Image 1 (cartoon, rainbow, N blue to C red):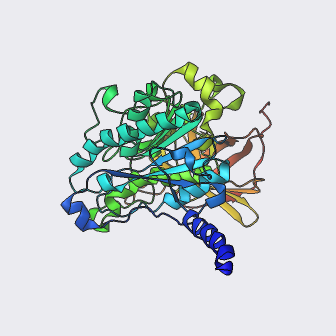
Image 2: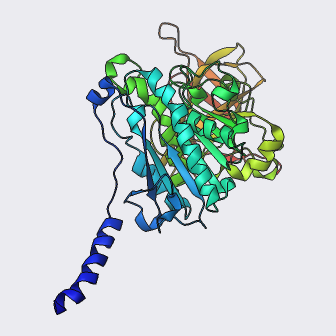
Length: 451
């Protein structure tokens, strides 16, 4: 009995610690659940720097009661989308890790897999409104306990983007920020603002579009809308249905991986305001004066640096291009070519930058370019990586005509100007480019350029 008096408190403390350290996993369902259909059930999984790999189940009625939830920290909610097979999103742990690496915050993963897992997409869409009502009540509880809604950030993927919008609208736009990653298009396109995400749903709304011709939403929905690769046909994604499920989801899901890349700060994708992706690819939209000294906005987590300017500008559509895989960002240059062929030449240009063992490639083939004597042809060159201190440049001219005679492009002057950093352009004069042959040379700083 004497021993028990000492052991009992120790055992109770041990049990409490074990309970506190119990990790809650994201709901893992399978295709059978989706066929049967699931009713809405929401779990709130808290991650902080103290429990970065261990989800803590929060109470809907008293979410701040858990000691790991700190009122002094900002809070970010991650809300997934439609789950037709019932499996957990494969990016959940990546996004919590990246968010926590950026800031000391409360990250709450909203697990509504029960409700999102359904082969009947219409039922999942119906559940977005129910999920939003549930989470709106939660936000009000947080507010009652001292959480400022202006410090709340909602990251919504696909259907989760519209859930975020419904929450924000119900709270009279007091939510600080909504980030929408390829908001769902089916059953939302053409709907009025109250039935979808729109810029008035939060103090700041930033949106990424990657699949506007299928699963995503085509029109702008935020204060700033980013269209990666024009919003369609993401590089590296399957082009035919024979690739299986990835053919349907790759473009749509790319939005998450682009966002993860931005959070990891592997590289920056600067986006340019433009009326169309075609004009952007033609190099017609590279003026960033309207954004002041910060320049054109960089896609991703840190877009709030441009918040004040964007709120004054109104809705802004921007475009950027990416690589096939991570790191997705590209390095942009303007290339000006003046030729002296007697006749007009039509064709494509491939440029390589060399510095030691590093090499970057830009193939300008989105449309055929026109080269006219003594006329400057301006092209946007997007390189797959950044190569500082360029030592050599290679050029190749092609026409794509297999049966016609081979032509030569006589270049009077080639000038390569970096867009993202202030450096003297590189030039080369009097170059002969036989068709389909790569010509390599050492560039020189352009004499006619003034900072």
